[in-house]
Length: 258
Length: 365
Image (tube, rainbow over all chains, first blue to last red; front, side, top):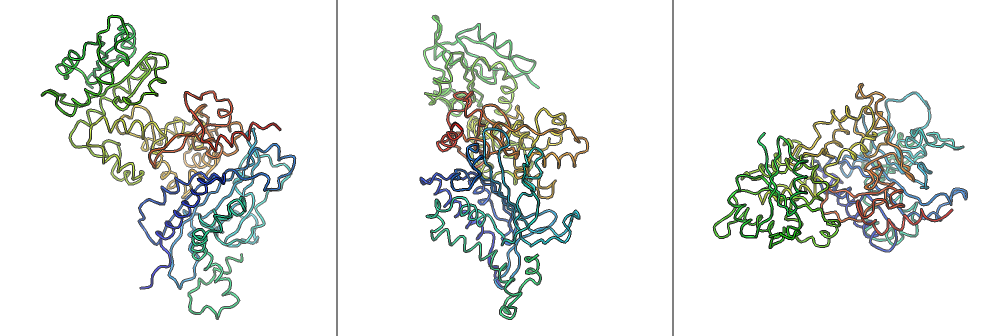
């Protein structure tokens, strides 16, 4: 029988190695503080009951983001004391065989996929400034009828979303917060969303880490698992005869393109 | 229930009698005794073992002019602990029993912090001013010893959990309990009090529970909501103070609300879920207020100083070594960090990098 390309132990092992690397940067003099690693570690060390289906939830807090690395409107800059970021990932995956090109992320009524990045510009008053980006997998049922016919790429980033619009007391100012456009984005798991945050908010400060072999090996594995099916199904849409040896989920590409 | 008896040794009989009057009830009897020289007191305790269920010792038994104590309370406690497991000169106790230390000396807790060598001999250390409120604790302590004095004990009995719930609790906690459960009762009790019951993590207290449910404790519907969570309450030994199993609450939430993750939701979402599920809670739950400098309503803990609900991203982390995986970091809010109102009593220091973060808030505009 053919072997599954990935199983829960592979993913948990890689995520634990990533946590190890992040703990190293906490220990180094880089002044980058990440909270929530221990809780994730405990989660990853639990007994794995099913190797072919795994679920992970993590909530990490990234501190010490340099204000000066971001272009903050000058009037706000003195008011904002620090920038902190909340990264929440909720993911359930199933494993496939090597030659199966399928979307491994599960989404149904009781299992939702989501990556949320909320950036806080913290002030000395309650309710400072915030910004939220949400990476969703398109929910194909329970549409409330709004935005009919709008494009819904299978995986899409949108700004705002629940975190901002659900807060009653949020000061909307003159920002128009709407849930469109939805930008095409390949799926991120815990490892890839940590990479996303590090490279978008710390850049050169973490270059030693993001250039390291172990780091890149972990990222490679995650992309191989999630991005290889994503991009092969897209390529197959235009170059179908090239992938005859693979079993490709028939409408994944169409879903990706929305 | 049979009345429980503590022998209380103090060189100041007046203070001791005042505490006795406030502590005693239909279920608890306190017998005040003056100290005696070493040989006499040990002789007395061994002879009278069947007449008491626990000991309360004053920290300094030699404080009065006519005091006859020629030993320290630690030495006496140490000898009692030894006699609870082993015979010395052919004499020993037949069972283990609680030993409490108390004092009215000002700065007692600070002095005691400097010399912690005797600390783990006692089940709890109290300032005399607070001892008189501890009737429930003293009683639950005697019951805990009674249970643990039995030769075989199950993790289920000690923690008050059903077999199927055991699987949903942090397994390192379960493992630890099964390792120590058949040792000296005092060891299990000391561990439970200091590493499980009185530290946030596996168990949470009512204030933290309210924060996690995104509900203001004073809300009209709070009591009603609590009654619905009865099955997640800690019912094990020493459950005189209310605690809830955090893992069970998290699992219940995910099962009840379509896989929604309690920790990821905002206070308004939590209330929406709860009020939709329980019609009788409709419009009876209100959100906690945000503290100064706080932005996130994903409340998860309370400030150690002010008890205000805060989310982890809005707190400053206390410098405290955590011993086990089920224990959670402790936080203070910006106000407390700036004003240090409870520094020295409720918390000592922030983590060094949190001190650095705090400095940002002192910079003038």
